Image 1 (spheres, helix red, strand yellow):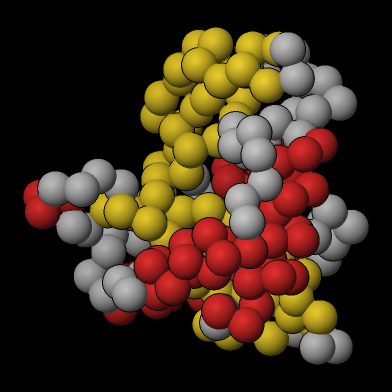
Image 2 (tube, one colour):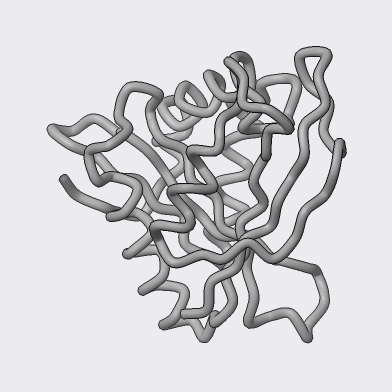
Length: 168
């Protein structure tokens, strides 16, 4: 397993991973899969200021993680929102832990101290959304700091959103 910086050339595989979550889950509240060119642009824009990482095994990308601004105000420059997506069949193999460990290391080196994760939260777990992401983040040292009720609607259902926080 290796963790490395993403490149624009990785976009097709990353989009393949992400598309599953857009089309089949409420993990992403995005309703339409972005185009490849839009996704390439997202990667390039993120890399201008923050890490965008992939984890691969035997040459195949199994997941990715990146940071974005928490808020677009200078006073928040030490804070970021973090995101992680894994290949739907790659859970439980340590890829997420490896990605977040490296992401935290790179963010700390850039003076980032506050990490925030915005997570879809089911009112009741269903086939589109479970509490797995919340449990993963708890395992990684994040603490829930906010609840938003019925703020996301997907698959004709309402979903909550939570914010989790970690200091590095």
